[in-house]
Image 1 (cartoon, rainbow, N blue to C red):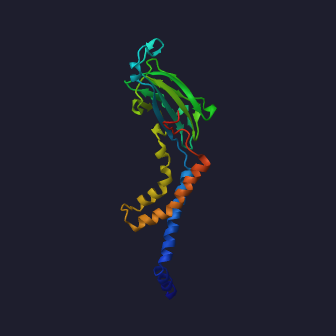
Image 2: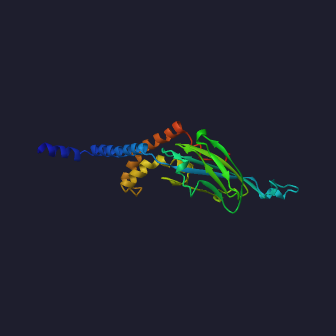
Image 3: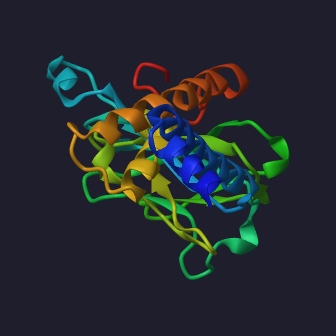
Length: 246
């Protein structure tokens, strides 16, 4: 009996052992999260877009200058670049797209889509194709399948202003829902998820909490490794567009 009491006294009186056990517990949680995410298969459709002016209205103050498209005079011309890709480990087949809500790009009442082209696809067998509606308000997107980190970049020439808000990407995919927007900041959010997850589970809300700093220190190496892994192994996400890269 005394040996158990001595053992209890040894552990309770040694703060370094408590810290080590705490670190091991946290690492166990983090490893479990990583293994779970690696084994999980799901469809993750995303889109990104940029919109730049090619010819603006004020240029027509020049005399004898006009812009025509198929006999119609235009007051402005803009170029939208839109990417759609799958970031999940589960393949998206076109059969997964809801027939009542197909994948399409709609422009609002401020403009019309004059033409649309498939500018880039990193896997030719995806077989992307697009169709412009007769009223020039929608571009329908079709494909055979999209696997992990495969997708397409489209270029849309239109008469609307150079604003991202004039376009809406619609469509529903089984087991995934609608296609969500993802920007550069969103692309790196996953790096901080181990810290956010553990801090949430332990209900650490105050920045002056001692556990707050312990968790931050423990998860920092994981976040650094994940950052370098993204840079070295995968590089920059080619489907997240920059305004200055058109």
